[in-house]
Length: 521
Image (tube, rainbow, N blue to C red):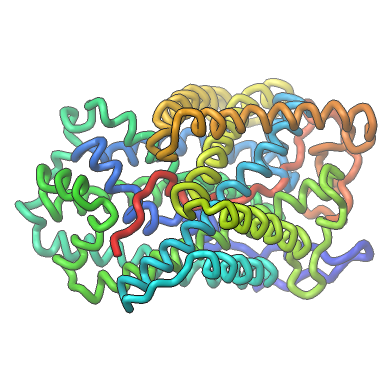
């Protein structure tokens, strides 16, 4: 482990050169919550898209891999901690960038806070399934808030180790299921029919793609850890591609094996009868009841891992905005021992507690309302940010001298922008599948995304008028390109378009489980 730099005269800094490729990959993949996505959401994808559902995850992965080309290229030119908003500022200007910053802050918080409802319900379901106990969800969610706060308060390498263990557990149980199915040859022998054109080119594939894109939300948060990464120009692109490739291939493979476990026709009937119990029935048949018990436990730890990954990302995003002067500067303080943005973490935990308690006092359902209603606009907001970032890449590279090739700076970003626009249309058109809510509620949830963005552009105008020094240095490059010396004060900078701009850390994503049925008890 590289030696941690001592605190500067201005105060302690984040730990430098601490996270390797594997560590950052753990944060990103954990945020996606693979076990929760598979056991909770994949059965619905199978029900809607039939046996061609695995191909939907591959197509979503390919789309996001194309996006990652321009995104990671920008990461070599923009060293700010603000990631999405810094990239967007560089290409599309400060007003759009500040709008993106507010949207990112709200979006990432939405992706995380709603998941405390999922933590409460999955823990209650697991307690009932394993011990016949009926426990209320609210105390579990509040205890989860305290646990996640402590995980974020500790050093980033502590968080990476915890996530590494939890990720191995949740992916391991899915690999065990797949191995059992493959060893026994499935219900009727193994078949590649899921990838045949006739199985993929069906009307339900559009819904599958919507679910598949949601399952990747948060993979882009690799760039948030730039200041804590070893050799970030290499580590961040590697971690991004590893995360996208792993999630796309792993999701497709696991969904395919579950289809083999039941058989092409039978799996649809089983998913319709008990979607939440599909994976538990499969692992009970092919591995044993003990493995189903482990799966119940690991779904809870999967949710905890996702919450911790998102919490760490949100803290670093808030830190960057505090350094910019957009958020109160107190949120930019770093703990002298753990080198974590501890006050940003405390503020995020307090916000989560207010939202969770508010839904509880209103008598809302922790799954259908706290999770789905809070999570869904966050997911759409982050997809909108990806679209803006893809558009910003070619605009930025047209304005500067560089040695990057056209594939990285024009072809891939433009293709990604088109594909992401299609993905957003798909998700919005199928939003009722994610929220299980009325048309009026869905309209409000979707409208929140442009409303927050427009509020951000209004904030930009206010900053330009009343705090011109903050507006002028927004998303400026750090004074020391490789190692910013003063994390609590953003340096003065020029207009972002002509210069490479800093990116603020982006938060990780809450698990993509928007319309998932609860796992069977």
